Structures are given as structure tokens and as C-alpha cells.
Length: 117
Image 1 (cartoon, rainbow, N blue to C red):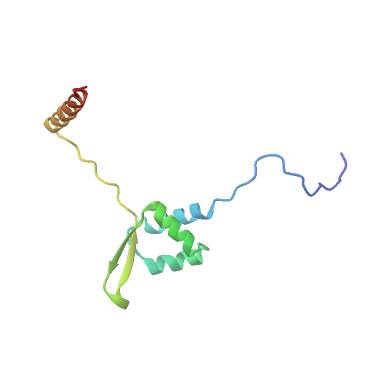
Image 2: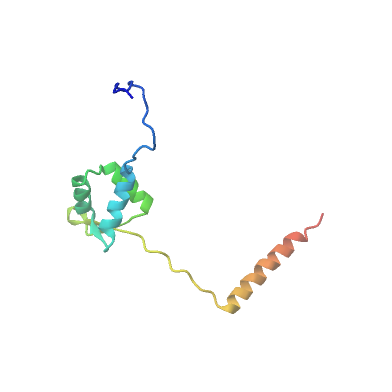
């Protein structure tokens, strides 16, 4: 083998090492910062800026995570608080209600199938 330099258009062999996307970094940042509850939006924006996350990327990450925004106070004294959404509680139906809903859906289907031709 000779020690010749590679041509300019040579591609490396093997998988490229990928850095995480900026949006993924922003999502991880928000999850970490909001894990303990509400945080003031201005404080969070300053921390994100110090971490190298742009305001637009932070906005996109907030939208993807469906971050909840809550405002307290009025005018200049007002503050905006951010928090992660809580998982909705699933209602458990009682046996009688399940039976009733099953029969209602069955009645609706059978009525639709009895249309006059």
C-alpha cells in the first residue's frame, strides 16, 4: 500500500457519525427543564439561549411536545409559565355502561343495514 492522499471527491467507507438534530436537542432540553413542573418562560428562554438553542428551534420543540403555557398577572407585571402536558386519565366504564354502548352501536349498525332499496 502506498501513502497517497485521497482524492477530493472520495467518500468515507462505513456509516457516518451523525450528530443529534437541533430539534431533538431542544426537545431533550425542554423535557429536562420542565420535568419538575412549571418554569417561567423568560428563564427557560435564557437557559435555552445559553445552551445554544435558537428561539425558533425552541418554539418548534414546544409545539411538538404540546407544552402548556399559562399566564399570570397583567401587563408588564404578568408572567408566562410553561409546563409539560399531563397524560389524560382514561375513564373506565362499568359493566352496565359497556353493555349499553355495545348494544347502541349494534342497533345503529343494524338500522343502517336495513335501508330500503
